[in-house]
Amino acid sequence: MLIFNVIGDNPQKPKSIEVNETLITRIGQDDKVAFRELYETTNQSLYAYILSLVRDPNEAQDILQETYLKIRSAAHLYTPQGKPMAWIFTIARNLANMHFRYSNRIIEDPIDEITSNELEARGVDRQDIIVLRTLLDGLDEEERSIILLHMVSGYKHYEIARDLDKPLSTVLSRYNRGIKKLRRLVEQQMIA
Amino acid sequence: MEKKELTQSIKNCANKLTPDCYDFVANAPVTKLNVHDQVTAQPEVEKMVPGQRSAALRLAPVFALLILALISSVVYSQFFQISSVVGIDVNPSIRIDVNRQNRVIALKNLNADAAPIIDGIGYNQVKLDHVVRAVVGSMYQHGYLQDPESAILVSVESSDVSMAEELESKVVVEVNEFTILDSTQVFSQIVPDMSMHKTSDEHDVSFGILNLATQAQENCPQFTLDELIELPLSSLYQLAFSDTDTVDDSQKPLECGTDSNIESQYFLPLITNPDPTLTPTSADQLPAPTQVHFDGDLDDDSDD
Image (cartoon, helix red, strand yellow):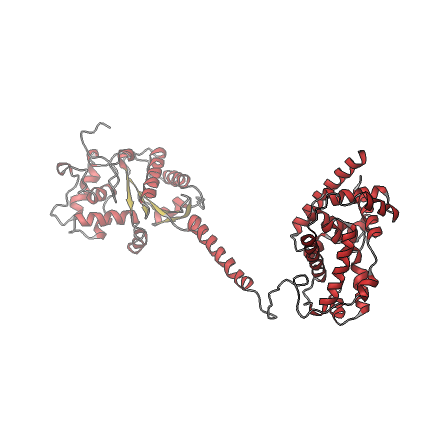
């Protein structure tokens, strides 16, 4: 077990996503199979990333759709640079920024009572909702995106650093600081 | 709450929340862009010809070499470059090369008599005063400096006069402290010319003696350098500084005279009847430093 922990990935951890850069090129040539593969590989991590930016599950869904549409409309222009997910994250971030600019809306409670009820209706446990609400409300954007990408998609820290174009040391420190803050805030919420 | 539980909660939420919008995004009509817009624009990447390195990379070894050279030159100048040369002449003549840190980097015998004196003395990067002590002790063990009337000449050659003065003072203090010599027999001089020790090699004599002989020849041009070099140390010293301002005309220890026979004039009198009033006194009675200054006081009235 010890050797397994040292030399290999824990099987319970999500596998890190690897997007083949040729998928984008093939999507540019209207290859539907390639698009399907890209979608299935990136869907959850992309949603998690967008959620960390906009903090609203419904708005995150809209931006997720727009991101895939943008990929389809510009994949033929894509220049391989070895970081396809960095390009996809950039599109999502730009769309989120445009969304903020046009909506001019300040989110005070990322998961309000209505959303909370919706989530419960979808089968999300009440404790999980508290954790998610605390994460979206209590951490800053950088901490949210790093923690969500690492926990949801199994992104390694160096991959997050590469695809979000941040120094590895920043990613590591923000992650550790964010986790500590999240644990403290969640415990406070639980007691309350 | 444990980190594992936090991770599980967040994954649960993500699993339940992530919408399945594949049908919509795969089938919705899209207009292909002609050029990237502000949303899809990719960052510019510096295009490099295969095999061509960036300018910074190409220059990196040059910078590294420059920095290495700079560090080497600083280290060399501080620890390995000769900053001053100290000469000790009794009969054995010894030369001590010193770096900027006043540590010894070379110890050389300038004649055959000096070879056994310095044999076995560890000197590399050792403080000058320690080496001087060892040299003086070794001279004593080899039978030199046991007569209080023995003379010793300390010469310091350096282009930095203040540093030379400091070294001269240090060495004279060491010599006075560790010998039984009459302090009037300890002579010292500063040679502000770093080429003197090189010239002295050509004359097969120490640079301290050569400097005295050169000074003496200016006062007594009728004698050759080789003749002057052979003179006893105290005679030579007095001839060299016979025109020193600190010495009254009436008290000049030695005049050049008109006799061209150097031996009859300067050897016998000094050997048989050394006059203490004509010799310099201790180092702490030095007059104000000059380029090459007299290490003593010939004033009869002095009670010091």
